[in-house]
Image 1 (cartoon, rainbow over the protein chains, first blue to last red):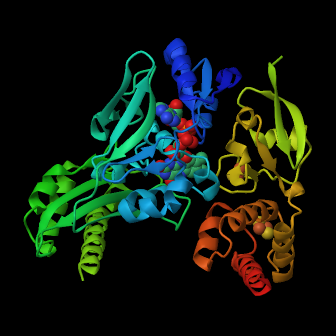
Image 2 (cartoon, rainbow over the protein chains, first blue to last red; image 1 turned 135 degrees about the vertical axis):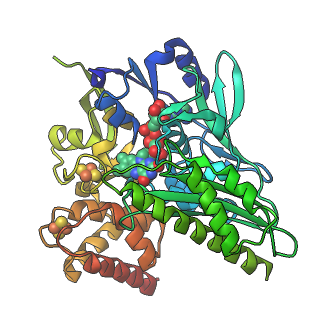
Length: 293
Length: 159
Ligand SMILES: Cc1cc2nc3c(=O)[nH]c(=O)nc-3n(C[C@H](O)[C@H](O)[C@H](O)COP(=O)(O)OP(=O)(O)OC[C@H]3O[C@@H](n4cnc5c(N)ncnc54)[C@H](O)[C@@H]3O)c2cc1C
Ligand code: FES
Ligand code: FES
């Protein structure tokens, strides 16, 4: 039984990469373990050895002007409370603060959230709208970075090679006159997975009249969160008024496929997504107007 | 027989060594091996907060935490929370009528100790957010939130 597996606690990245090289696909990484322990105990994931990376030195924290670097081992609670992340990448902090209770967020990491590639993983939409890259390191080949969209292959499937560990996320600076937000539709105020979620990054032109660029990512509308690029193209150059919002929402729906599950029916998801999107647009427009005033 | 592994950690200020199987949870070790049954078992899946302990000062659900990952770390359970701040929290909850059946209470006290160590003066919104992972079937939370606000105001007045 997998619960009898070996368990190695590692303290340095070099040690972790060395162990990953020797064990490869027989190893599973455990950061906070909030998802991994369940996957292993239930037999959903099988491995001979668990490599505990939670306490590796130097892989947590947020830094950098311009392009920012978010260490893969940064905990969700630290992200939710980081003043710098809140002011520069608000949606990322908002999403981190919605994952389970504080007891989960205290140990759950950004790397674990993204690498699980769960359909409802909360960090995915806000990182997708920032065009974030994931940095992967291996002993054999050194480091590489991949756009998050290329990293995520399907539900619970990523482009991570068996000997690689995710070490950071790179977030390019946001443009002037922009704002981002995360709208998450859920049944209760907390302790729920999202039914539908929308991350939005809106940037306005100099007159604050027309959209210069918009990025939209949705979850709950397909196997994994995705960028609604057709809708983005429709909105660019136009005023973010009712008509533009409706046309963009239709374009998002055209790319979506909805499921019925215990949390909500497919028809409810379809009905609520355009409203969540419109709400996100108004939050961002208001924030940009308030900053410009 | 299942193989076990020794783990050494500081539990309530004392160094303890215990034998752990595979991916056994910290909650099961605390309750069954160290007989610290103040840490309660509710859902076993991270939803109810009854099993909350402080791990290096941070609130964590012990039911989902791999005991072997606690090697060398500092664990505080409800039995060990006798510092002045924790005592004020406990007294305030009793005085505000924040306990009925009491099953959630240890987890709530541990969570609140973790909160007030990190944020000395949380407002009601932050207190409610922090408690969102602690389920109480009896009280309706209002008395518990009042108790914390009382502790915060008392602290402010004393300073
Ligand atoms: C009660 C509860 C509620 C939850 N609610 C939410 C929620 O609302 N939203 C949400 O998104 N998630 C939720 N989760 C899931 C989970 O807590 C998060 O996804 C969390 O961020 C995972 O982080 P972790 O460090 O615990 O990952 P782990 O459990 O340690 O790892 C998860 C997976 O990622 C891999 N991994 C971890 N770190 C790395 C790395 N650096 N490089 C490569 N691979 C790595 C592991 O091998 C494993 O496959 C919840 C979990 C629980 C228990
Ligand atoms: S028993 Fe741990 S959260 Fe419920
Ligand atoms: S007092 Fe009964 S569950 Fe809280």
